[in-house]
Length: 174
Image 1 (cartoon, rainbow, N blue to C red):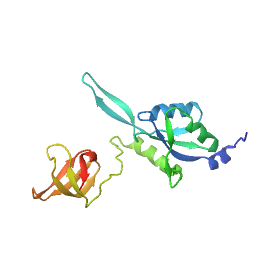
Image 2 (cartoon, helix red, strand yellow; image 1 turned 90 degrees about the vertical axis):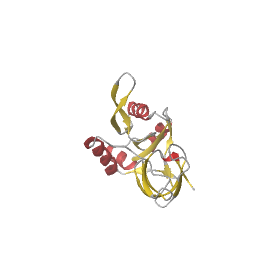
Image 3 (tube, rainbow, N blue to C red; image 1 turned 45 degrees about the vertical axis):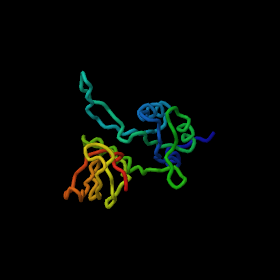
Image 4 (tube, rainbow, N blue to C red; image 1 turned 120 degrees about the vertical axis):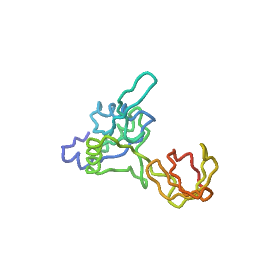
């Protein structure tokens, strides 16, 4: 069994992205920390409203993802941890994040309250789209701008541009 000094361990370990089971991000983070594995699950405080009460809860910033700083031996332990699906791969290798990027995320969540991670859209400016549900069902238009969850579409039939604040699954390419 090889033991690492702190400098050797820091050279061998890298921040990697771990994909978890749905809604297991914080559980996996705790399980990894009990195994003495350096993990980071960025969370944001949001108000949730139920019928009988409103409560501030910590939700993961990145759904189904967290970060681990693990050497090769710890990577095996991470994979065997309950709730871990696998490491996220890029070009056949585990995706890595620099220490400075992790610090940036930490600073961002500590200094801002209204943060939301929106995945990269499957649509882009210039795409021709059709609305799949809601009041504008079957209307077609061209994407002029994408801003988070909002899509600005040019609707030629209506002779106007509309800002559609919707899930992008409600839109389909023509």
